[in-house]
Length: 275
Figure 1 (tube, rainbow, N blue to C red):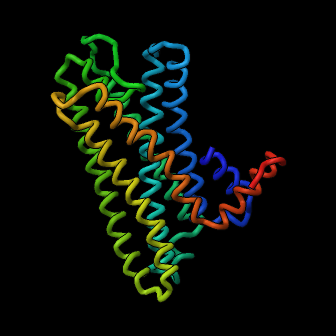
Figure 2 (figure 1 turned 120 degrees about the horizontal axis):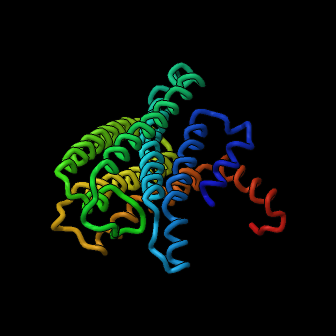
């Protein structure tokens, strides 16, 4: 609901057609996509007391989840760059983040997510499965599928995972470095209220990113001896459900203009809604 309101508010308001809100719209789309890929199927299985998913459905679920979650992380990196330029290089903002540059960066994020998802899905489902067909998870994810493989080729997938997370960690280092520069600029703001507002927005963003990267890395690269159903479930929820749920709160609650437009969208759709 939160991501849907953000998408509607930005799409319906010409005042929000700026680089920051353009990237926020893309982030909301990726969050909505990743949630819709896993949670509805899990809810269906729970309500109908079934655990079945077809082989093709499992492959499609894995592909789309990796696609949206990878694009989300790249988009978060771009959004951090947008904040860095707007705060630290405001005079160059129009040059560095023009409409064409924003479109190219967003397209690169989505294309990178697509390529990453395609490589991992094709490689994972090329492995022979000989240890049954039961996944100990509420959605299809790579570590659970690798447990069913009886081929040494799964080491190739682990190498791809390690490379992907090295790339993700590089993005995270860039984000942290950018925020260090942002914090240095924010500390020069004479207003205590202005500094508090900047810190209260940036720190939750870093917290959610750290949670996503650490839990996803632990889930995919932990030794098999540490695996247990309850631990696997908890870790998967932390990186697949929590970040897409928290992002709308972090990016919209402290944005007064977006809150106003979101309220207008709500009241238009539901005329009898209370404040």
